[in-house]
Amino acid sequence: MKVTVIGTGYVGLVAGACIADFGFDVTCIDKDESKVAALRAGSVPIYEPGLTEIVTRTQANGSLRFASAYQDAIPQSDVIFIAVGTPTNDEDGSADISAVIAAAEELAPLLRGRTVIATKSTVPIGTGQRLEALFATVAPEADVAIVSNPEFLREGSAVRDFVEPDRVVIGAETDWAAAAMRELYGPIEERGIPVLVVDRSTAEISKYAANSFLATKIAFINEVADLCEQAGGDVRSVADAIGLDSRIGSQFLKAGPGFGGSCFPKDTRAFVTSSERLGIRQRVVSAAVHANEARKLHLVQRVADACDGDLSNARVAVLGLAFKAGTDDLRESPSLFVVPELVRRAAEVRAHDPVAMPAARETFSGITYGETVAETLDGADVAVILTDWPEYRDLDPETMARAMRTNIVVDLRNTMDAGKLEEHGVAVVGIGRRDSLDDLAQVPQPSFGQAAE
Ligand code: UGA
Image 1 (cartoon, protein in one colour):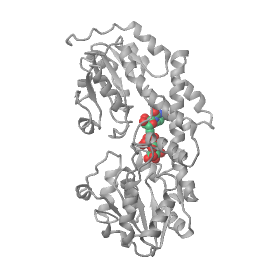
Image 2 (cartoon, rainbow, N blue to C red):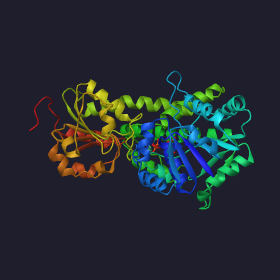
Image 3 (cartoon, rainbow, N blue to C red):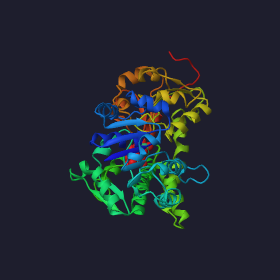
Image 4 (tube, rainbow, N blue to C red):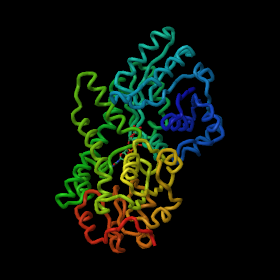
């Protein structure tokens, strides 16, 4: 079976490479010729563990190709995945599907024979129907079936999530299209992983519902964390206590700076707006969106509180810029709000991230970077952990205490061993722990503006 994937972003590139690795003949198309040239040379533009190896292996054995012209692949294709971006529409929070429509319009005249067109991009409910109408108008002779095949992969573990998913969802309206898609996912189904064949609307809704539910879980535990800070509990233990209930489940109950990334913020907003267009209010998910937005405002105040309320001239070491560990992606990362706000409040910011620094240098202004964690912490009054990278969790308390001017860590991910740090005289302000706030009273407060020793 010949497969074409349009778009070589996270979803398209991972799907294309993994399907090629299953043994199918795959062409990945991207309009950006320099990106195609780089991919042909084996250079993968995103940080995704395991992906470079698969791209190299499948190009070498001839099952994966890259092209920039539709003509080079569409006419021979049995299945075409559309995996282009669907960013948030700034006006109303809906998903902007103009790139999906443009791809469909461009490929339509090139179709030959029976073809499945599957949306992998996260598209608003009803997009399948809209594409069907488009093909009926611009390519009435084409024998096409529009399928929804949503992707549930996470950045940082995208390859594993594709190859070992919890389930595959295929939204198809015709048996032949469902059969073609099942053939593609045969290597997964053979391992006993459920492949659900449902109608197209069900598949489209399932994608938004999955992301919205997980985002709501995070927004919920973050508000429980706020309660713990006032009432004296520990949100990590509350998460354990409720997560062990198999009806709730322990994942996505880590309190932190709020959900970010290219999916949850965008998809929750789009779920709310696309439901509203159909006259349905999503009160629960709307509340999660608002709670997550409001959370950002308090993050910097936490750092300011750790500095006696005044950030001017405070030396702040920001550890972690990516929206989560395992990726270099800054999209809707808490750092995009926290770093400029620290700068606005006249803090001296030095930042570090194990992989996102090249992207950060193009994004932030008015800050410096430490090449190493030690360099970043040198002379700092407060360290702020924004991303849960393992190297921050494993930092040696003695080295930290020696490097910093005032030993306060604001750990917005609860990633560090607070007890161990406190033994070495480093105060830790975590999330959802009353005692962490109290610790500050015992730490000598910095007097900013003095040169580090
Ligand atoms: C998410 C979903 O998890 C994937 O299943 C989905 O396919 C993907 O969106 C998508 O729609 O493409 P991703 O955005 O890569 O994947 O990241 P997650 O690991 O889900 O994390 C999202 C955000 O929630 C991050 O900001 C993370 O730090 C935060 N988070 C996650 C928490 O604050 N607490 C948690 O317990 C878990």
